[in-house]
Length: 334
Picture (tube, rainbow, N blue to C red):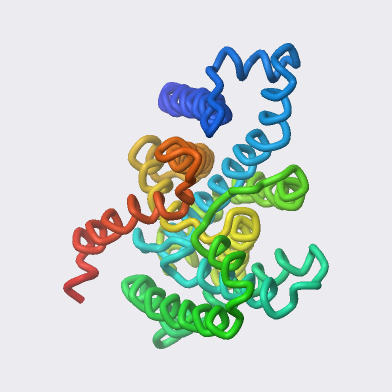
């Protein structure tokens, strides 16, 4: 019986993986110089024009790969946060993780321009942790976290952190372009070095999150039931939240602050494969990658050679969805 139930989910995951590959194939052909899927395949095989091969391998392929990695990490982070906090509104940018990582990254980029390469991911990780810690502590009452309060307090904390970002930008007008590009969320200018900076973390944290799916399932049952099943609640919750913060923090260093990817992708995945994290996490990963690669492709193809950052498109899609979800869950009435 278990095998029969899992077969449709496995088939769906395979279809999502094929859809992601198709979107990536289309994406590397979109830009000021367009390439058809057949020309892309020829360039991948090394039998195309030298210009097309160079465009593919040096400009577009690292960009698409980075977008897929960062989208997957944002989505898995959001799925973990929604499950552990037990709030469908939770996502890295809503609960202060994105804003904290963005603030730390801006501080590193502008105030410490000569900092070594490892300083940016380290700073973003620390900022993400501080941002969510503020939300978590402020939402805590009588030793417990009220899920309904997390999203609303997260919005306030994110707004405060964003104000600090703006203050730094005002005081450093010479470097504002680089920082704004980072904050709006984009994979523009991505190269293999930037991919190499993100890939080891993705290769570690994404499989680790899936290996812990049973713990996440138990945490979604509520505190009393989780304790009744023998789980040490606080260490388990802390480990899960640290993993979610780490995923979002690393994703911010690769693609900037991509709005609402961690909110939309897990909800879509939950509709398709159900609430079990064994299926929810890989589905969220694939959908998050598709969302970012698709937004970046659309941003490149709308008004070439002008490019619309992927973060603008994901925010335009995610903001109304968040408001609808907030109304549906009763958050606006509280």
